[in-house]
Figure 1 (cartoon, one colour):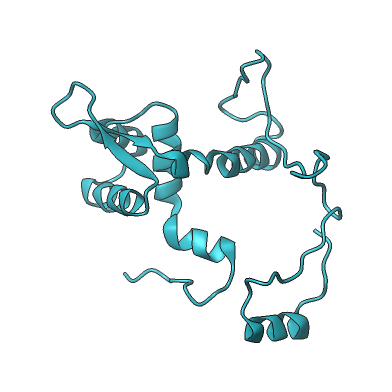
Figure 2: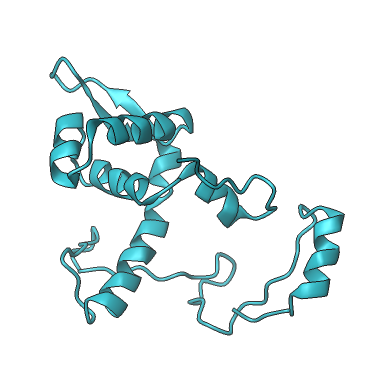
Length: 162
């Protein structure tokens, strides 16, 4: 089955979806981050076929999200690169959303910050530090958006507050 590609969309979300292709990739990244670093461990805990796991690991490796490491085991293991680590904010937000909307406020795992307190993710403005809430941001094209796409933007999209 051919995957849908979003190469033609001038959008960071679409381009990220080209790299993190499906649900398996997110779960593999999650497990590696939480310490499940070996192929057999990933296969067993995720219940994923060897073929699919191999394919997803190869894609994550090709995009520089994971790297192979020596573990004392002849087969080695995996760890997240800096690029992969930086997806943790996205994953934290996904967990917070799922905890709130799918688990009634408390999900199956918790995160403890180095301060010793249970922590939940929230998005803050990198300029002023205030939390970004619905309605506190406006979305508009940047100079990076091709001119033709900007014309479509102004034709079809309202300047929306997010």
